Picture 1: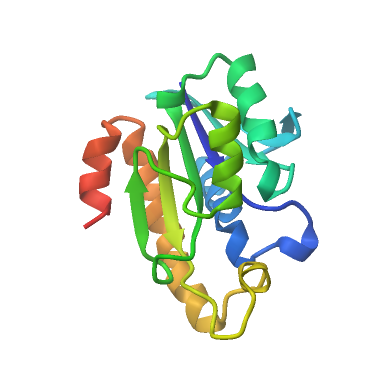
Picture 2: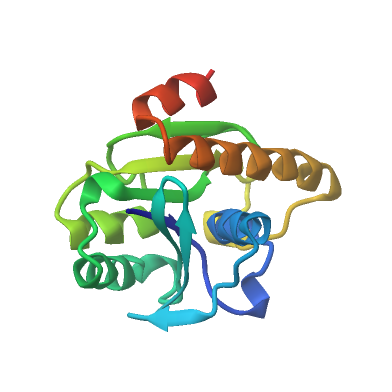
Length: 186
């Protein structure tokens, strides 16, 4: 059993923003697998998918980014999901736009959604896929930047990043995450 969590903020104003790339990946995965996130529990929207590799939950916390752990921890407890079966997808300011970085553990690196997860899970050891959104231009506040939409040029790059992330997630269902890291971190 796996839990794939995409971080983002709920609601129309946040759709397609840099901070919501985790939601976009979950939506694309659901689309490719032919499922809808039409179930809700613990302030989250989710789908249950039965794959040849086993049961997979796709989850979008609807708690807003900074409170993501308030959804994920009770969800994991309710469905008896271990930390080693969790994969989290989120945006990263320290990577260039569209670049992927897979890791098995680490600090929050200033990301409030990951801070909340670490606080509620009580560990920094869980699989994650960071998708680069780059740094804001000089003079622009980080909050304004991550809540902005991608330019037309960035949308092309991010479509490719989302597709690669979906491939990595599918690979992680049947292979050790370390093997997937070695392939996709290239």
